[in-house]
Image (cartoon, rainbow, N blue to C red; front, side, top):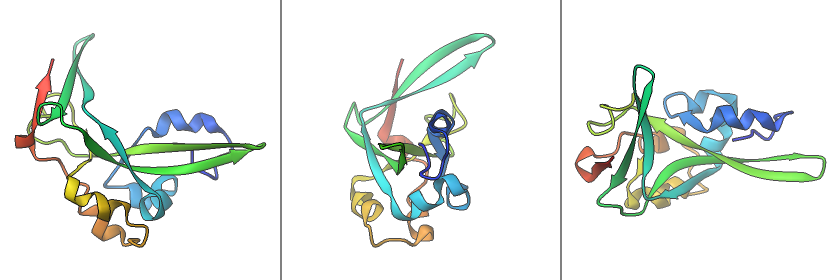
Length: 144
């Protein structure tokens, strides 16, 4: 994500993910969490496990490849007549499935929480923060 106030768009590479525990306190993510939440659709995500110098990819999915959505935040950066909309995926502590591979996981929202997450009138960060939790491990699987 490139924050709207950034002077340089190269900051985006460092802000692909936002830690859910600290997003509301950081200037780069605070307003996005309060006013510009989005859904990022997916059918899986990768995490990499390291064993020495070797890296092994693991693909995680929800219910045999069902489409789901990550909790995201977005911003619009403008300079010199150029406008770019970018986003970050919120992350949380891992569940039992992902913890064997990585110490974080993306926030996956339950379908019934999409409306609350996207509600433009919901500026209560405490209430939306309750949605940023590890996804139910019983509803996930791993593909190697």
